[in-house]
Image 1 (tube, rainbow, N blue to C red):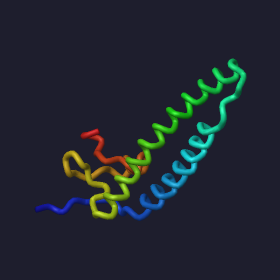
Image 2 (image 1 turned 90 degrees about the horizontal axis):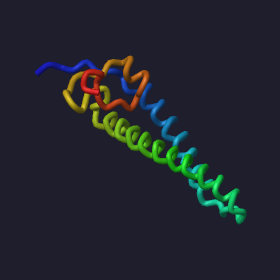
Image 3 (image 1 turned 90 degrees about the vertical axis):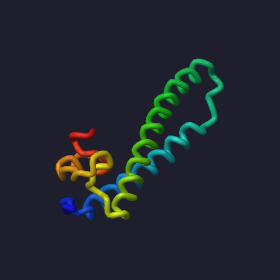
Length: 109
């Protein structure tokens, strides 16, 4: 059995933790904004609703990224960070530099 060459996860763990904290703070703000009492004026309420739809989309995207980051942190704990979940090969450091929570190598992505 050959040993896979993987990257040092420590610098990525710090980046992932920082991004996770940033996303959680952002989502708390979005939830707060969405919970505000609607404006009684119908025209203003329509404009607010359009803004709410944008906030909901941003929130959904943020939740997806949070899940991906948490999965990457789990892979770090399991000693599998930098290993493609599809083929088992190494994920290039350049790919992880760009997307630290990437679960797949460029070939499998």
